[in-house]
Length: 283
Image (tube, rainbow, N blue to C red; front, side, top):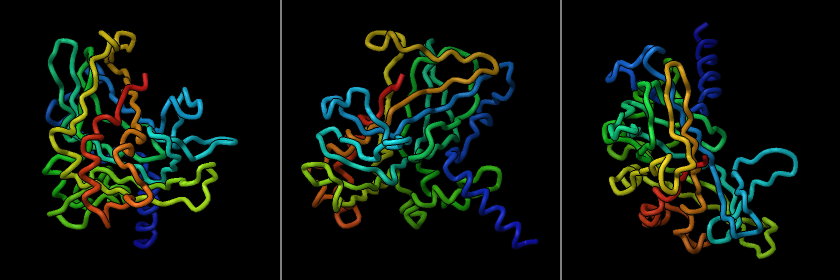
């Protein structure tokens, strides 16, 4: 019976490992729990490689595109043809900005964005009108020092997904971003003998103050056509975003020789200034 229970838990962990929500209680500090005074906030994040000037790619293409005739290869911002295998990163420190100018922090909410999932539940927030958000790519210092077995647990089922981000000790903590893929070096884009790349960016780099993502204010100026987020009792609002890895990879000129942070740790620093530029509104 004990063996069956272990197998069952393992199966549940695999099923849920890509569902993302690692720690999701923003209700404890704020005591927002009733449908009468709150609504749900989700993040909807596309994994994307796009450049509108290359190959007539005016609409863009998701790297997790599926369906008949779909190709996993996409062009990055400087014209290289790339396939992504493992694009994942943490999001924490989410703050919503109310139309009144006040802010609302989603405490204890940690998301882990992967390739195959786009919808990520955050928590319930007070009813109101929200115009923008900000967040950290990575983890807070307290979270970064706790191993996966004690920290990232939902409904008592550990998630092996975030364990892949663990650097192996409480001193090192986690990677904030892991990006693995392949680079097509052929001029005709045949994909023959692609060069693999692996970039693991420590949380100490991704979660620095200067890399915090601050989204523009919706409903005004350039973003006047972007509807604001109106949270009513029992409602659900999605913050739709692109995570555009083409901008992230543009900081590396030569992926043939500069393709692994394990052998060249200095590469991780070159990504730092690109993190906030990865994100934009989808709608």
